Image 1 (cartoon, rainbow, N blue to C red):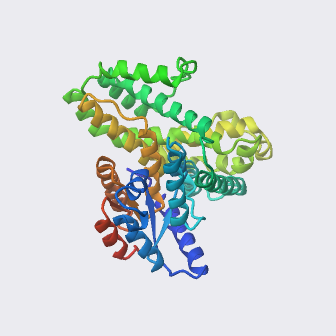
Image 2: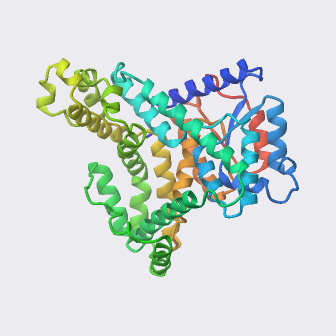
Image 3: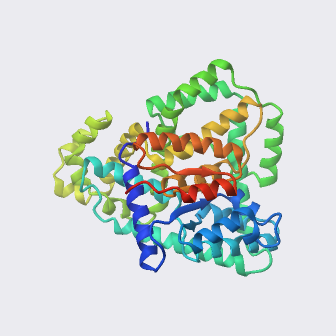
Length: 423
């Protein structure tokens, strides 16, 4: 099950977004619309002007009428600067900037995950977050940075994003190679995934250790070689994965928050100052009761609260325990992303294929379900997966949150005419 309380943060954020637009003179209650890269790419094809494309015409009219407001995300920007043709990259970036009115950048799945973690903790420890300002500062700077990168992508000629784009291509290739290695022994992969999820086991082994010295071309060659040995999941493994997929997604998604916290809070002492460690320790019994997690080390329980507040090493231990507690309940944004990855891995293995290097990008796009009323994609497989996830979210919230997945202009038009859930 997804965390029961998390959707409330999405409602609060959406309300803030709509209030901001209303104060700017736009109509109240517009639908927040997010497009994955396939949707942006399609608008540039088959029409002399993207505004004349089927989806582009619907969005242009809906934004003018105050019925919709389009948001782009960091992954949209990343995929845009990877375009190999300068003219296409500039066209994509210019179109996005116009659709988002040069201001609406979603903060992305990392900040979504941290916000989820904050919501999880404050359900049991109301004063668990001491200085949220650190988080808000990093989120604002991140949004401004991505907006700036998108503006540069639209304005400069030549391969100025060459090194950055090559790094991204290398990352995609590494991700695909890891998935390819799993495909050589799919049943073993399922067994390990389930064992790790149920026991919340972690390892110090670095899965990328032997890849650091390989070039992108060498990794691609290795992927090609491994693809010829991909095996199909057995019927038993498929049944086990179907049964345990939610458990896997919750656990892996919860544990992922550890690396995300380190990526967001990079400066010394930010984590100890962000979290109110004495309060978390004092209320740990409530966290235990709700999640079934382990108790904190006895030496921490017995430490004077005044000493806890200034001890960075203790702070990291307490936060690590909180991460494991969150993994037992699941964080919405990370659970969504892992669901997408596991479902696509399963689909590919059943066809003895390898997932594409863009699978991690699909997972990032999927996290937008937590903030947006409508998600547009032309990827039929991704749409099917997101519809299944959206149905779970609607059920979990009693219909208070029901993001819509659309693949055509007609579906988009219909989605924008439906009333939004009451907030």
